[in-house]
Image (cartoon, rainbow, N blue to C red; front, side):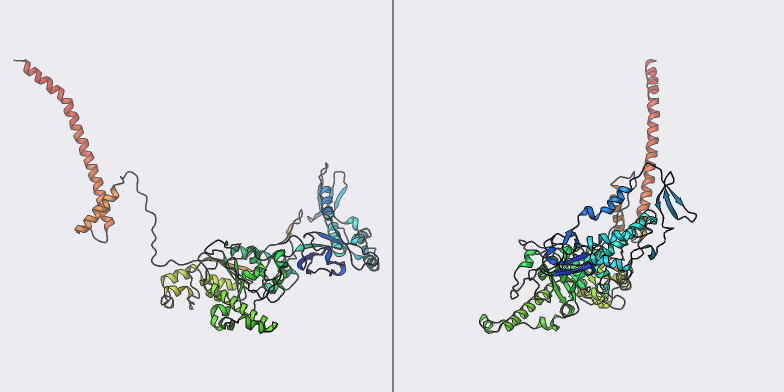
Length: 605
C-alpha cells in the first residue's frame, strides 16, 4: 500500500462525528463535507495518510476553505491535561458513598469537594443561556473552526460547575463532534472497507462478515505470498480456490495477504495496450468460482481494479493473478459457448482491411477465448493450496465439486452467516460416518475405479466422502468494544446486532491405498530374565508345534507351562547343588582325622 495520497485514489475521511466517508480524490475538484465546509482536492494530493486537517475560516471573496494540519500536541491536549491533573496529591482522599451505594463526591481531608457526582445535576435546556438564533449566528460566522462556538456554549451553561469530570468530558466531546470542523485522512484497506460496509452501507451485501471474520478466513485458509521464481524449472507456488458472494470482499482479503491487491505507482501510470494479450500467472493466483456470466467484484473498484471497465490498467496485479471461472465452465466446459467456440485466426492482411471497431471486437474475442481455455485447463488439473468460501449456496454441494481439486493437506475455510448449514456439513464428515463408511462402503462407491473414487457424488446416507476431510470444526468470533473506566467497566451497550457469523474449518487428506497395518508397542519384559529366553522359547514352541505337541489355538498356555517347569527345574538343581556342597564340606573336615589314624597304625609295629 502507498504511503501518500495518489491522484484518483480512494481514501476514507473520518469526520468529528466518527462517521466514515469514502471518496475518490480526483485532482482539480472540490471536496464537499456537508456542514463542515468544502476544500480543494489538490490540498491533500501527495500528502501522507493519517493526518488530521482543520478547515480554516474563509477569507472575503474565497469560495473554499484552506486546510491546516493539526499537530499531535493539540489533538491530545485534553488527555495530557487530564494526566497532569490526575497526579496524586499528598493529602489522603476518600470517597463518600451514599446509603444506596452510589458514589456521591470525592472530598479531601479538610472537607473540600474535589470531584462532584452527577446526582444533583439537572440536565435541562433552560440551563443554556444561548438561544438557537444566537447559536445559528455563531455557526454562520464559523470563527476558530468551531472552537469559539464550543467555548461560548460551555461558558454560557449555568450548571457547568455541578458536572463531574466524566460528565464534563462527555459534554465537551458531544459539542466537539457537532461543531468542530476537522477530518482525518485514512487509507482504504480491507478492514476499513469491511467496517464501512457494516456501519455506513448495506451489511447484507457482504453477508454481514465483520473484520475479525475476514481475518479468520484468511488465516485458516493459509493465504500468503507463494510465487515460483523465474529460474525454477517446475512451478511450485500456491493457488487458492475461492467462492465469493460478498461483492469481492473475500477476494480482496486474500489478495491483500498474497501481495497482489495494491498496484504500484508505475503500474497505474503505465500505458494501456488493450490489444496485447496479458499472460496469466501460474502461481500465487486466486481462481474465483461464480454463478453468472461475469463475477460480482464491485468492491474491487476501491483498489483500482474493475474488470468491466476499459480504464483498468492491464498491469494491475489482479489482471494476471485473478482467474474468474463460472460453475458451468468448471462442471461442463463443452456447454459454455465461449469455451467451446474457438476463434478463427486471421492473417494480418485481413485484419488491416477491417475497421477499427471490428478489429477491436476480434482481438477482444480472441483474448477472452484464450484466457478461458487456459483457466479451465489449469483448474481441472487440480492441485490447489486451499479453499475459501463465503456464499449463500449449500456448502455440501460446493465441496462435492471442489474437494477433488485440492491437494493433500490443503486447508478449507467456509463462512456462513448462520450455523445450520455448517452443522450439517460437519455431520457429513463426522467420525461415526467415517467409521461406518470404512467398514461398509456403499456399492456405488466400490464399483467405481480407484481413480474416480475421489469424484464420487455421494448418496442418501453419505452425501460426501467422509474419508477425504479431517479435523472439522465450527467456530465463531466477535470483537466487543468495552468501556474501561474506574468503577464503570462494562461492554458498550450500543453495539451493532445482526448475524453472528460462523466459520467451518477442515483439512483435505488423501486416503492411503491398499492395506494398512498398525503395530503397537511390545510389553516391557520383567527384570531377572535373560535376553535369550524369549527367542529360545519361541524356537521351542515352533518345534513342538511341528511335532504336533502343541495345539494350534493355545501356544501361549504351552509357553507358560514350559516357563513354570523350567523355573521348578532350576530350583531343584539349586537345591541339589546346595546338598552336594554341604557333603563336600563334611568330608573335608573329616579328612585330617582319618590321616592321623593311619599314621598311628603304621607306627605301632
